Length: 133
Image (spheres, rainbow, N blue to C red):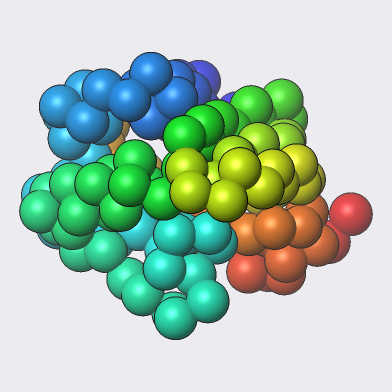
């Protein structure tokens, strides 16, 4: 397993959980893409570049009082890291809570996240990565 790539993913998720967008930006490629399962996911939105990540972050903070991801399993797949865990969110206005399994496929290049794709199931993430259990 590429420990360097896994560490970049861990640090990126940690920065998101801490709401530290500048740290997230420092860990992402200027041309990075974010495909979020929750914020913009239903609309198929793709957040591109550092401005896109800032936009996603602003939308997330406006929509959710709480939004945390805990990734507990990592698989190295070349330049990609497939990660699994849980996501917890609480709506800012509604107070509704979401607790779901989550899967992510991160593409890492030159020590930075180039693409991050979020899913609300392990199976979807495995399928997107071309893997199976």
